[in-house]
Length: 89
Image (cartoon, rainbow, N blue to C red; front, side, top):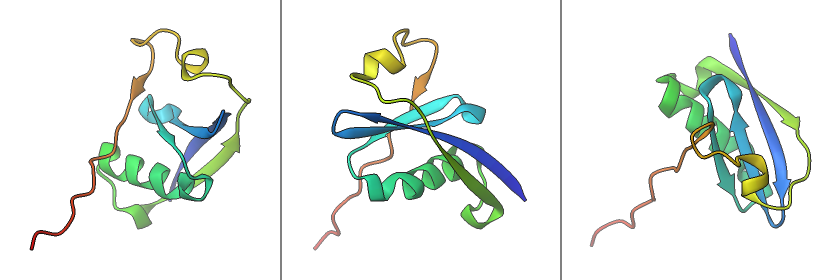
């Protein structure tokens, strides 16, 4: 089973979730959602079923700002999950 390294950096009140193998990162506000968001990002970007891979979370360094993590916007690409739509009535 494939395993993806996921580096997690504390950034003020948020968390940066970085998947080096996919060259993507995103921000989360809830620490409890880190693994779920990482798994969602990998599944969508790698085209893999969530049960087909492992997620290896590794603590990164504490950062003051997102700019400290990705000072060159072209070097790392940010991933934004699709917004969740409310069910229509």
